[in-house]
Length: 128
Image (cartoon, rainbow, N blue to C red; front, side):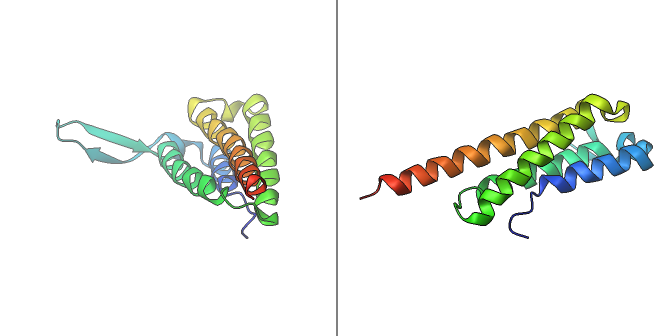
């Protein structure tokens, strides 16, 4: 479970909702009242973006480990990115800004994961 890429949950959830219940992604589920008096509506897709950003933070933290499971996580994260990118390019229901941002999160996960792991490994090697 330690090597499972958490953003795969967001990609799978968005894909499921886009194919089975596309209206849920666009429906305002609740509003966040601000001090200015404006209420910011949260749609289903927005909720997935917020959860995805939280999971991206967790993934970056998990990338600080240079264990074998962390390396497997990076490889699986790359696969999740490739699948999400293909979905974005090929599936008409995925061609929107919300899913594009999810794809960017998966790309950020891949880049951050490999970068942090390489930097950590390099630092460990350079210690006397």
